[in-house]
Image (cartoon, rainbow over all chains, first blue to last red; front, side, top):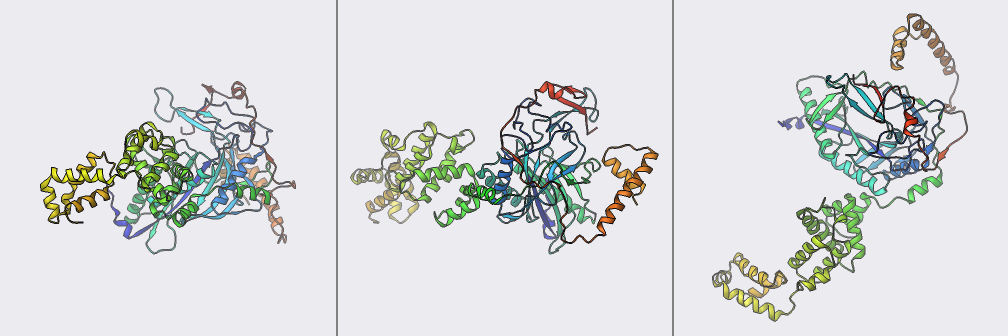
Length: 488
Length: 94
């Protein structure tokens, strides 16, 4: 890609995200059909989600609870009374010819997550799935579509941010924070590949320093974090080129093709934003009671942003480490479990082992997806191992070997240490004897160290480590060698 | 007054094909409705909330408990066309 980033001196990106989250309720938003994924088509339908005449929707209580939890986690103001609207459009993915959504009075507004303000949070229903098939032997356009209503009516929460992002990489990071937050609440699978988390981006450029917003394009279909970043980047480049050529950016909707990395405009007539919203007469207003609100509030777990704060303030973890453990829900859960199992070991030491050695050795062993939770290393075992290192019962080198064994076959670190004779050499007599042999075996290196060349100590330390199978403490070995050579 | 172009636009959004005579009649009827709304707008309605619903109910909710869905055969019974368990429709991308 020929990226000319020179325009960044002249224009400032303005990015806002629109996120759809499928809620993991048992049933659909307005009927009792069970939610499903990857099943045979049309096994979960009824007169309501097929829009048979005379059928009436009834709101799923759990979906409201989940949506309130999300809104509260995003620090939103909950509307005392919100209503559903009909969003009218004709497309075969929606048999009613309208989507039940919320319009001018959404469930919640004015929130914040990290550095990004939340404009609104509302409830709506998902559309059916369409599979376009071309008639055999004919070119594109002459085919038909197959409609599967299993997904039609799945509860969705739509989250719209203010245009507070100014960089594709930051947008990606923020979406990851949002994903972890929602995952932590446990109200959605938030899986981008499977479509339970979807993200559109509104992207525009304005001259650096300007207040007024430029004309924006809406990007759709970026179904992975990588594609989100790439899609926004591609659109920024496109708009910068237009502006540089003194051409107009058209307000339009673009479809991102992950295979080619290209953005193609959706034909505007099909997607006319003329939805003729009006209040849904079949559904009464939502007015969350104090009981509903406090129940939602109390069921919120510790969320990534406050978990990060706690790791920094109370556990004194380094910034990067605190962020990694707080924003990666799986790794964070593993760390929490190890902390709970630890017997007086400093949290920072455990954190180092989780984010450092453990992640690295899982990756090296190519364990399925390097997810610690599904590995053979139990949080309990890791906590024990970190504790043994901290108490200097084993050396760091020996601990690495124990970890390799744990990754391969699991087990109890204490037993592995015993079985493989990896306990720290605390008999200094034995260690001193080995140091003496090291110095004798390499007089050249010994002489250079004696002359003040500390780099030459490497082979001597290596000798001792080999002889002790890594059980000796590196610092102690260095000290003994220096002592032996009269440098103590 | 709702003019001919506006009627055509609304008809297009609703996927309706209107004859010349219908266009004329719709233009008059829709204009009549808007005139009525103008009369309401002329009233002093400060402090009166817009009416979105006429029943005094809130929070009518359903427990999240699955019910039995339609047998697929039954669901597809009235489909104009079908294929492999799915409703088959003319492609909207055509």
